[in-house]
Length: 197
Image 1: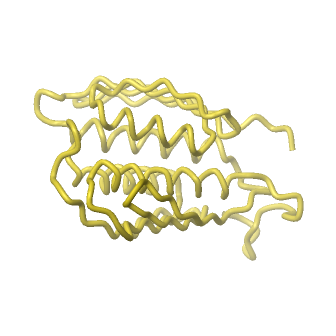
Image 2 (image 1 turned 90 degrees about the vertical axis):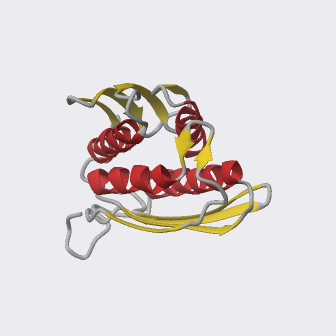
């Protein structure tokens, strides 16, 4: 299939001003500037391992904290994924992956179900990684899946280093987005008994 699966989205509120461009069938190129260094690192890994071309700029109310920036970027990336994947005809729909990062290990399973649901099971070894609160990792993924219409199970299975823990979760999620959005020549139409997702 030769359709172009790209999206450009903007969102401006009293808390954040965000621009996202995303290509599902990319090469893993990322240009990320959110003002939160470790979050930028996380999104860079998401693009690289998901083979997404992703550009994100965000000007948020970081004088308060990083919460609005992280959550709102998740909202906009989720919207961009939903738009880029289109009607889902011919895609695999499902994906699952394990991603190790040194001593950390994460598992992800995803369904492009049209129903946004996050099942997140992770306990981090510390409250901050750089300038990112680890409690916001779950908030980011919840915002993304809710707006993308994805069911995502993310499980941190092992790890003692919080940097590695967060990064392995991100890599696992990237791998399942990549797997589930790829076209499968054996899939005819929308992969659902309903005929729509």
